[in-house]
Length: 429
Image 1: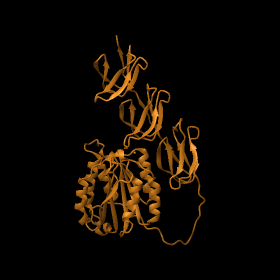
Image 2: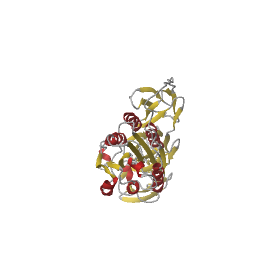
Image 3: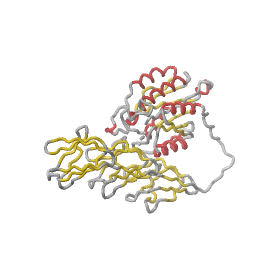
Image 4: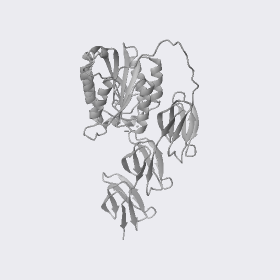
């Protein structure tokens, strides 16, 4: 879910040189994502939420004072552990930008990023916020991650666009993974908008400037003199490196209808053109668009652990902390959505494990091996004092992430500084 700047802004920026009338023929809902992933650090310094707040200020400075705007925020009221999928609030109601700027900036300064990412729910509320406002109803969604709640953003955007002929949704992916990019591209396509990528804070500002130059799409004709009916052709869905241990359930995102399961032995199926959800264990690759006569390819990654413990290692979504699978000595790899993960090693955690599309990410932990261990065992602690695990006469070695540890031997705490792949043999006499 980066995983999740999950910054979501719903707005449209116009360049200073454009006519004031062009800015006044639309109503804008500005939505700021304050989910927990927004606290992630940017390579150039600062956090994603810092960059988002700056972008709000830049946007308001360029906006014509007569353009009607409202301001909605989500993820700011509940911590991530609460898993609150209704955490959103309309902070400032509709009024001309000249009246709302001060209130929006003040609300923005006070926001603290912490919660979940209910994109589908927020899109539905934003469309309702703007539905009865004058002019075009424009939404620009800037996100650093994917949906962390129920629902499919693309299916929701399609339904909203069909219900409101004036609705346009543009999306910008800010340091997003492949699964999040699929969602954002799909949302823009079905809601008359466009998608673009942004790699950093400066790039985000540039992409907003590009969005400013886009004219609203022309209104569809209201009458037809001819009618052409084309027999729908199926498309194909393919999964590369499909999971050898678990089937992949495929469902229509709008209706919930299930289609034949996919697996390592059935990695390609025919589907009607539409938007689908595909399971990868307990996680779901959402907003997968299948087009008539074309093949849509999902390219998941694989996490593998060398010297994995018999008891196993839980693999967690980095943003939500939800378990998405496990790896052990007996099943040493796991097929995952391209994203970022944490992997548990007893009481220790290997953080920020980024897996790209089609990548086999091999974790090569250090190993603490004790010869002559007692039957009662010897505790191993992480640098912060967390109990990682125990080595004993019956389990004489444990894998751990690279880092600093201590092991208790005969009342002594012996320090260990371990590199990736290092085997530390300790002989007790």
